[in-house]
Length: 548
Image (tube, rainbow, N blue to C red; front, side, top):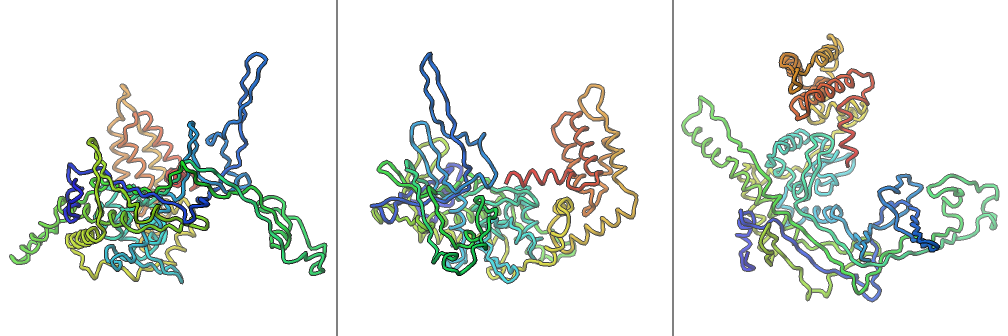
């Protein structure tokens, strides 16, 4: 793509079949005090590993070598065995790479800027009243998948959007929270939709020297010697760093801190770079279904023409094109937005050599060489604004209906839901959004089930009746038919629905027949158990949560 290509045409060209798979932007950085180039990366709880010693023997000679810790085998999750440390990867050639700002952190710094970019007009502004606090969705960590959204007055809207996204229709989610597609989202406690980041940025430094620091705290006086408190007041207590006195915990005695994380020093061989990756290939994979309106039989000719004209704009191809251009426009705006460089205490950065060192832009293709490119901020903002207008026109949402300034976190619904056992909460999530209506339906179904004959027994008998044919190639048809008919009869809101869904997934899966029988019986046995924590839907949910 030529450097002179108009950014008005860029969205179409970038998304075309011969377009790039990614846009990479790099810009060198440096500390504001480059004469003493020490910066402080983010700290993480790092295990205090013991170094490993490897001994090599050859006859009478013996050499012992101190090896770096084995991070996989020696990791210790005990907080008492951890201390703050940096994310530095060391390589066999002696080089290293240190994370200065992670992709997650960069996304959280950039996304809230859409509250102000072009007056906040590029994306829907959703304000959620959470108790006495009011939060814009652009500021919320888990984005559209956050608990503040799932238990809000817009819970049904977002659940429908994620349900559509699960079948690869992202149009509705983009109409509510497009930045959730730009910066990535995981609805980890409901529909389990997980969408990768389209905008990914990070700051890394290479070839750094890790430093340490020590500090001494001196109290305003010796409280015991000065007679301010009695000598018998001091007591030893268990604290986060071991045995501590109550006076130490309150900052009333001398305290020494030695050899703690003291930043990293950049060297002549160091490179400090901010990298932005706009995944154009991921945007091409975003799709939208058609959304035609049915034409009533009693419609007048004029009404029929209006609906037909409207449906011409609602084809899958037109909705997909509008969706992709809108998301690409937002991703490019995020890419050109001036980044925050005062990252944290001790990590204040600037662009290297100021204005003289501009960022480099590259279009990365699947098979042909990369191509230099330029981005003009004014034109990109203009293109993004036009793409947004076109998207919401296709969505048939008026400009004044895009924002949702009065969303409420439903306190009563949240307290009702959270007061239930985890196993029951997992089952509720299977059926839809967390709302007062949904909780009522669940309770009604549970009550009806308790009053009626227990279907668990019938389900267990049907599972016990499953047989594999003599050849071992499939399940016998008759028992499977009876079981599927019973599964289909289980209504939404019924406590057994979660197990029914899992059994259907097993029946439709690719496991061999014998394994299917075993898995289904395990699911039924788990459902029949008195402990809700051991049922199959809970196991599935716990696996999802553990992967976070």
